[in-house]
Image 1 (tube, rainbow, N blue to C red):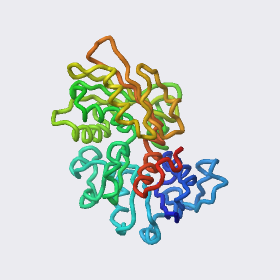
Image 2: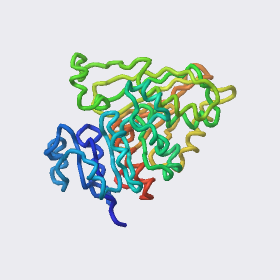
Image 3: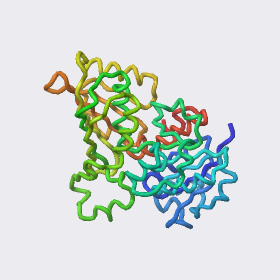
Image 4: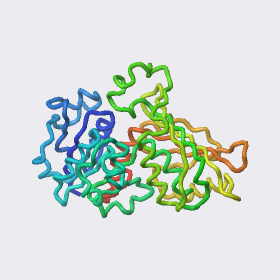
Length: 340
């Protein structure tokens, strides 16, 4: 099989570097161009020493002319910039965006949550918000693939099957997520310079974090009821990983055992989602440097409630790995290519 030519725009952020580290292992991808803004002229080895022995192009400024010989474009840019690039795509070029530019189905919602006007509303219809295990079978119909955010990935993977099967109540859901500080990007140390990142735990975005919009949009697809949830993210003194703890009420006559069985059956053919034995106390350490999501269903002192634990690596399953997984589905490559 001949290789696809790829362009990566935004290659030096934490997600961008992780993406490059995966793509250099992908036997069906040739990285033809690396693009950046403040990093023009530099080598990727400046950002990760493990790339020193890889044959990679130097970083250049993006120009629409670069798209002439490209099959797939990855964008890990500040919000809004992938919208601009999307306007230059030929019909045979696939765009895989790791930012939020095409995550929301309405331009008005994008403005509400991201405080900027969507600059390519006419192309939203050509895009799909793709969580591979949930709607990857629809991916081939679309030219623009939007990868979910890291927090929503950890939350939606356990919840969507339960919503689909009407097993849990859609009100009074509490989603408590803790992430490594890499999730806030390379600017995290300037943005949170007074937070003592290496020795403290910090809540942020309380009540109104942007990922609320993705969670709400996706969950509403599986119920006709109004959803009532609270999502609170936290930064922890670790570099990578997410652990989400979800508190949820069961519908009548639904047991914890049934919940575990339904999830196990739902994901039994999936390569990367692992439903663990009930009451397993999982750790981010179990999923670091993998594209896996580990899920555990835990009992509480109340029979009609459960606690769901969900762990991912925010830079891989919550970012670059999910992008490669979507790539593999789109182009019919073996699913675990570059991800095993």
